[in-house]
Image (cartoon, rainbow, N blue to C red; front, side, top):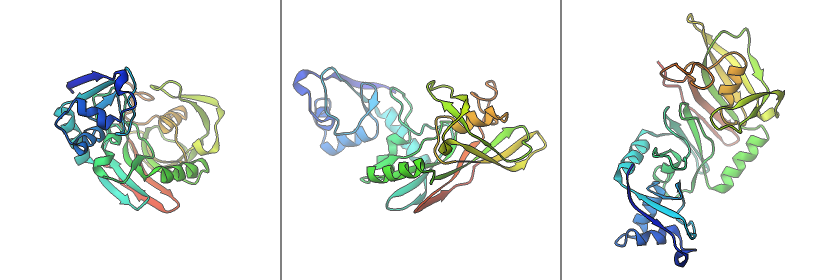
Length: 276
């Protein structure tokens, strides 16, 4: 990713919208073109992608990137597929090894950065996140009102999320992990001894077992925390195959965790894991 221009906002430009401020960097551009650059993540303010309406403030560093990143965004958009769609919500398939949410200062584009391309003029909001190594369903809410409705359903335990996880070991029976999680460390979630709230339990059901000593589980959660399933399963003694954080850090290849289905009032979506 290469910068083609960088400026620092001065006092005179404080309060100016980002899409208008960008005219200083692209004097021959139209408003629609500038907004498209912003929506595609080719403009950052202090290292973060922002909305067109962001008000400028003195000292902010505005960076414009070149078409290399634009091509990366095009590659992300072409890899996405819409699984299900209504007027309120949609489900996207996220391949593994792709970021769900925008990361400040990261040269890699995320699906969140590309939502305006996939769903133009619909106010698309990323309503759930998956780890980079996890594949499966990303829920998209069309507007803040729908996003808030989904959050309320999550808090009430009325949103079902179902994952497939291939793990090392053979559980004797289905099980539930209720331990509370400490997510203060962004790299590794800590499983505590005390029980958490009921919406952050991980319920594991045995789907199949294999001769190599691994087991396929279907894991249901209502509301997730960072690395919840990965940390809970490892704590129970069944780390996910390919998990470099909670399993074998030297293991190479795919991490076998896939968001298979999501279901709540008025919406449901399902997609199969693309595993061999």
